[in-house]
Length: 338
Image 1 (cartoon, rainbow, N blue to C red):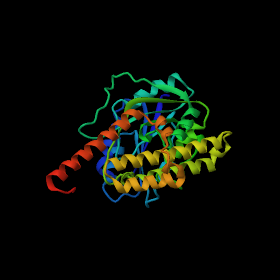
Image 2: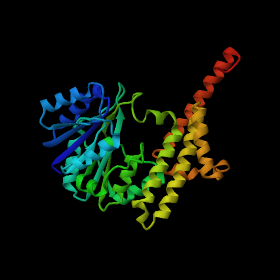
Image 3: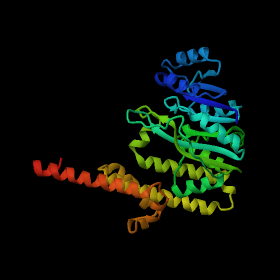
Image 4: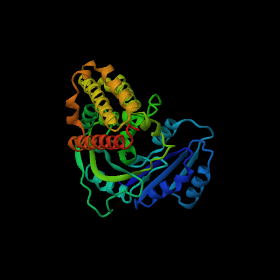
């Protein structure tokens, strides 16, 4: 793989756009194109994009006259892509230094790899990113194993801003589905995982994500049960379409349904320990409604499929203990819990 196309859909992120694009242009990739697709922003996005395109011939700019929705931008980017590899980057995020140059040797050495992805870190003062000179260790596995993993986890393990897909594979998979407003990328990766070939994963940080109130995922973070429901919709769409042709589709659907119950149940317990009753009730209600047996026996099997389950459980228990201790301290001091 000698060339990469990076598409950057944008809406009202003019204040972040230059930093995002420059993080791509500074990657040191010999053959690189960047496409900014603006969805009729009313801020200074167009001015910033036009200046970036004027300053660097690798940057191309398309502006929609009306807001067509983010799916239109995503799918326009898929149609535009012509390089060996493709990455979709949100305009409010950035690539880590040297991220793209870490993908190139991997794809060159193994033409069977259709998808490679890494980790993301949150932009902020405590952000920790590996040096560009640090060696990157990739784990390569059959693409189909990724689909099994999705179904056992009940969620995606891929940060799309840190994922490069072989363009020929992406063209075969097709467009993002507009019926999935929040988990369109998850369903897309499930279709990629159906393809022949391999996937590669690294624990190195390759994307830097910005957390802010205008982010598309902000409302979901405030209502975690919506995230579970959106993942359920992605599974339903996948198994109603391409996934229906899999010989073991029924088994995978059972795994996914069970995993969503487990995710919802343990997330509900975690939220209760953190003192977030609204989120806890919604999550536990989902789990019991989908599997009434969880009201009697917790889905312990789901813990086996969590990443670093011991550490995560220990962190929740620690928060619960500290929260209880803090409340007890306030009660002793005031005579009531505030």
